[in-house]
Amino acid sequence: MSTTSSTVVELLIVDLSGSMNEEGGRKWRAARKATTAAVDCIRDGVQFAVIGGRDAAHLVYPAQGLAV
Image 1 (spheres, rainbow, N blue to C red):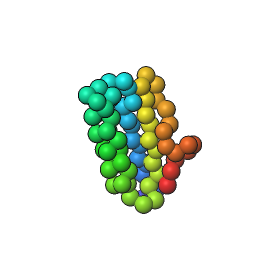
Image 2 (tube, one colour):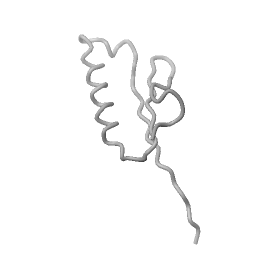
Image 3 (tube, rainbow, N blue to C red):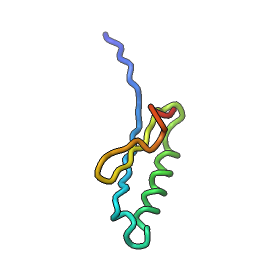
Image 4 (cartoon, rainbow, N blue to C red):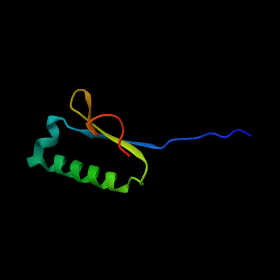
């Protein structure tokens, strides 16, 4: 029998393209609210990061590495 260790990592990807500002920014506000709700659901001790992008992906949070 083998024992394996697994690490849980949550990665949130957020669309930051210009179309998110259409409709008076409604899409952007909804994405921000959804991202906040998703972060609130992450269990204590789980590493996570938020990636955002328009035409390329960029680390939004944390400043470097993964947050715990």
